Length: 174
Length: 179
Image (cartoon, rainbow over all chains, first blue to last red; front, side, top):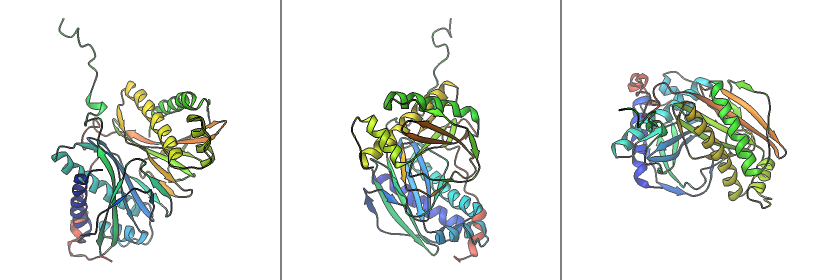
């Protein structure tokens, strides 16, 4: 796990939370966690594939999720229904998307998966041999933890889609 | 969600389970789910990114997981420790990898993410606007449920197509404070 991959996520989270919810975010202390993550109420999971690969989680309490979704959608949500869940997942999606733009600028292009949302406290998520960097982000809405389990990708950013097999390589010119 | 993405996974699972574990799974009835999935004891989560995108989940019980890895590594596992976890995750990884090769052969190339393992029954996993096709695979060692929440990517599947622009709904919130 490389710390240089972290800052793009922190910056992106800061910018996106500011733009989407209007809250100011303070970054807490960084920690390296080798243990599986025991889930909080709400966890957004996204994977990265490319020159950086792995998984990023955004975890938060139910109250924080609802506060963020309420601000984002401009209406007070009272339960974590489909709309609220989709709002929180979208927040994770936008943060990760923005972070990958920054990573690509630094030479690490990657593609992100659609978000998956986990609701329920106390499950264990293991990223196996990927260690997680954990950064708390505190705001008026509560605490969001960014949990980053990524490493430099093995495939050097060559997606299969980018490597089409030429249909008739030798005969083309003849 | 497109059913044509299903067969590569069923074939891959059958081949991999046969090769790695020596069991021949029987495919149960397909179902389509729009609601969130409630987890079994062990869930392997792998994302696909490319011309097909989405998430594949493999759900199984701890007992089935132990039986599978015990066969895979030819040694008895009594506890679902990190080696056993890594074995189950690897099984999901190999099945998904094989399936993605088949998908690429059918003109829908995708890269797969490293596996993530979720332990704990009763947690809700939502794939949001992706509906899930669910296929149970039953074998002597128990049942593995394959959940596919996939769709064709909107563009050619490269680059940042999956990332929407910053929505400006939030800009209206400039004057608002947290609740």
